[in-house]
Image (cartoon, rainbow, N blue to C red; front, side, top):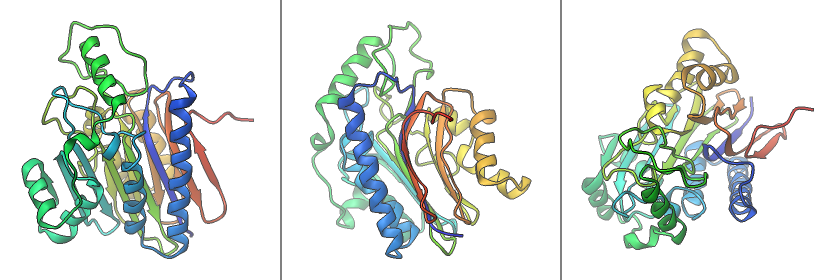
Length: 318
């Protein structure tokens, strides 16, 4: 048994031709955030503190679809959501945030300062103000890149996947087949005593309908932790919700006795259609796994025994 940490910056149809100006800043951020988390675990911070710390840092980076880099709704606004959970089933979630700088910290306040689990929209914003949470004008979260993404999505007449080139126009805009939460951020951690935590944060989908809620804040879909494992998922939100992805990993461990790697692989390869999901997970015994069935997933991990990995696409086998 030992500590372990894993984090992601979104899974999706990430082309191998992703330009360096889009790839390198994200890789640098993953490297920085991984080191931040490792140092925190080594200094004996709780896994809950660690995942919040790492996700806050990811939210503050405009290159990911959370916090400062959140993508825009069809109305050109941001609606951020987040969830945090520990191995004792304590959890908090928020949705529909427009001014809160770090949604993940507000989710933790919901967990620790209210009798509830989930607050959304005006109620969540009011709760943030009541507790002195840092807020900024909504314009702070709107980046030139995301304005351009929204323009492309509207021209293509559909929800736009983050890392792909603009799509051809489709007549059927009712389908969510193009939806992707590529750029969603998440972190899972376990300490040397087996304490677990998971956190996920996102801006949602480019050109999503106002009021749409994805998998990220839904316990058991995009985020879950219990005494066996901690999971943070990313990909196409509707598919992740239908598959109760994060909870299924834990359930396969609990009820079928699968290892973390086996359970996560089963969910990603067999329970969710190809091209829809990726996840990072750690177990109470210090295992770590980062499977995905998309083209790629921005990801990083480290364990107490010295293993570390930072990658986007599938690793080549020797």
